[in-house]
Length: 328
Image (cartoon, rainbow, N blue to C red; front, side):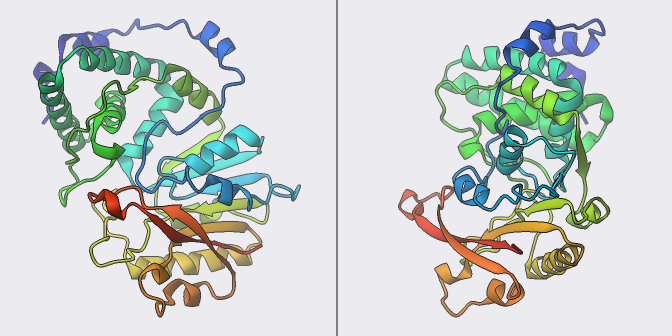
């Protein structure tokens, strides 16, 4: 369990400081036109595919006034839509409770989060390589202690540690073991930006009208109607036996889950909603593998180029095909 004795003195003082305040008014004025971007690096993030995905935004249809993203992850598509469109209502969700806690913290407690991130950024950048590793491992241990404790008392602190670890760990990877504990080693960034103050405040402002849920994709059904655009970015189906990384949570997303998702997609299609879904293309390694072609045979399937970014062997970080599936 977490002990305040292992938190540094500055963090302890912050937690106790009920009179904490921040000069946010001038900052808000400076970022009124700021374009928000993902506050986390995220394995499988859609930044590189954004130009292809945005070609399929259905907002040319004036009836589309709502947006849903049930596997929000790092939110590249979500933030792009926030920057470009003024919609009536938005719903995002994920089953990763650490991730959703970070979104909620930015929405409701952005200023306190910024203060904690500034403390860690200053402390981390002031250290040499050996000291940084010790500091990183210490914060990773505290983060995992907080995950075990599962207390709302430390939600802001937990969010700050998630962002710190994401900004300083190997490849910005979020990975947990079978016990749900974060186990990614430290990365080798020289001067990582841990506290992106303007972006956090800008995101906080835009999230005021967004419903944020820690929930399964099926829980979004009641929100979805004929006026809704839904983007699905589930954990990708592995294209090789050794490429089975889906551990963004301690739960596996297997072929049965993919089929369950396809059935849900068909259900919202019948409601009149428009959707785009991305996934891996099994034909990268097996031309005879028609898993998704059969599963989504009634919809449009496009194959687009993408880069495999996370692989321990840099020679294997080449172009692959990914699928973009839609009903319009």
